[in-house]
Length: 300
Image (cartoon, rainbow, N blue to C red):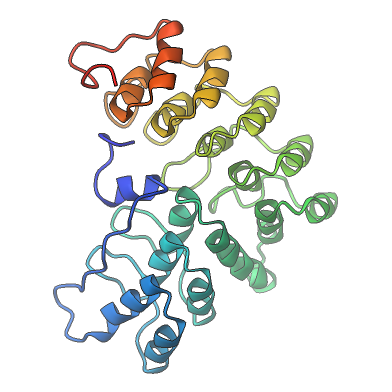
């Protein structure tokens, strides 16, 4: 959340943020590594292919430790991401802020990049013995028939949770209500945290775009509105940051904590004041929330 996060962390969380321009590592002696990242951010498939053919390492990093695949995912360069993956890019590599390619794609709303990453994982599933790969891909696509088939074939609803995002988190993030219902009916845990940068739960994924109907499904299945992320922030804090008044109203109806702080000392109303979300501030005040002295800089 703004005011709480710094540098690449803030940029990753904001869907409108811009990944910093690639910078060559200080000890770099050639221009090819940074050229690969620049070509990636520009979506220049021809240049990317030429650089790889010339021997540029596919997982070369810039000064922020970001790889070309991370930039492709963050910028929504889906075709470039597929090319990099086909050339052996490692999707598990993280930058200096502990973000991997999937983290950037999910947080910035790059659905195409998410699918590219999951398609690659699914293609490798037989050799890697990864039962979750197909379920994750189908859930992200909203492919109810395939989800139902895989669940009937005894793929656990929470398969793969220890490796990254759950199928339920994927379905919640991309607003696939029927898939959410199918996964919950099959035993998916609505409070199971992802292994993402923020260790989110599905309710938080729904908060990014204010998916009220998805949140209602999750809460009906037992999602805890006050379950925190890696830093202790809960779904209300997230919704206040993004400014989704309807989502905030739903959290308030279900008893969300008005005084919860997380990554830094910011309560929900203080987050909403700082981000100048007037409708959200009004809802919180009506629910009895007050900003502490010296916090959030006053009313929007």
